[in-house]
Amino acid sequence: NPALNTPLAAKVHLNVDYPPEVGLTFHPGALSEGLEGVARCEVEANPGIVKYRWLRNGIEVNDVDGPTLPLGLLSRQDHGSPLACEATNAVGTTRKTSPINVEYAPLFVTEPSSES
Image 1 (tube, rainbow, N blue to C red):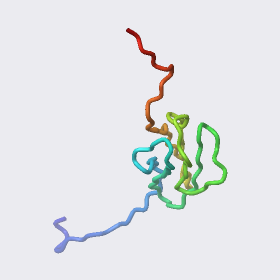
Image 2: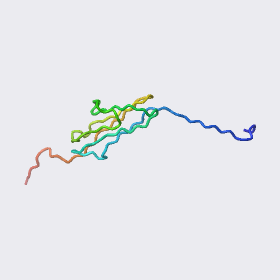
Image 3: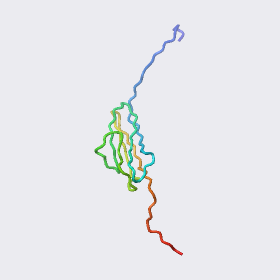
Image 4: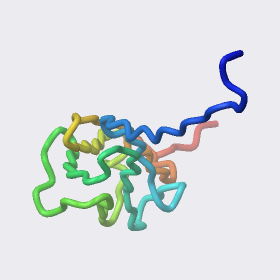
């Protein structure tokens, strides 16, 4: 501005509240039949005070209220079953759902037979 001899500057710190952004990861990275697995709900939110809710096959897991869910001993029946983590803060709620991907060895549906 031509009316000023020296420039003026102002700084402002904005604190923007937003609902949780949710990611769902599994550990170990490759879940295998016969091993134990863990799911982790990774959340970024402001305010950062977050309440967690887990659903396995659409049913709420009542005894876990944190960002980590032990999956227990995995079997082929767990493969493809939906797992959801829901995170809530003062602004809103976000849910992330992912199927559990369990690797397992092949199984014969019928016994092989020899033919000549």
